[in-house]
Length: 70
Image 1 (cartoon, rainbow, N blue to C red):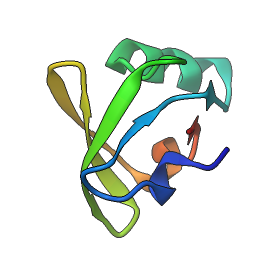
Image 2 (cartoon, rainbow, N blue to C red; image 1 turned 135 degrees about the vertical axis):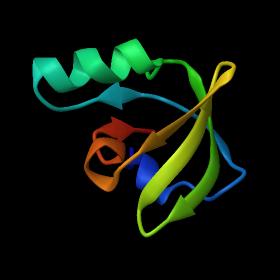
Image 3 (cartoon, helix red, strand yellow; image 1 turned 90 degrees about the vertical axis):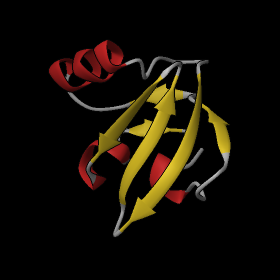
């Protein structure tokens, strides 16, 4: 497993684990980042990501993206 920040732009990955405190995991789940869902990295700039989750594009900073393991 590796953090979502290691994925390349244009790559579609499957979420394997969400780490962090309960509040962080709940927040990511509300955004659509749940285990076994597919996420496409649209762009990456300085570790900050824009991801396609279902029909939405979500911007994540480096600290939140590091909590999502692929």
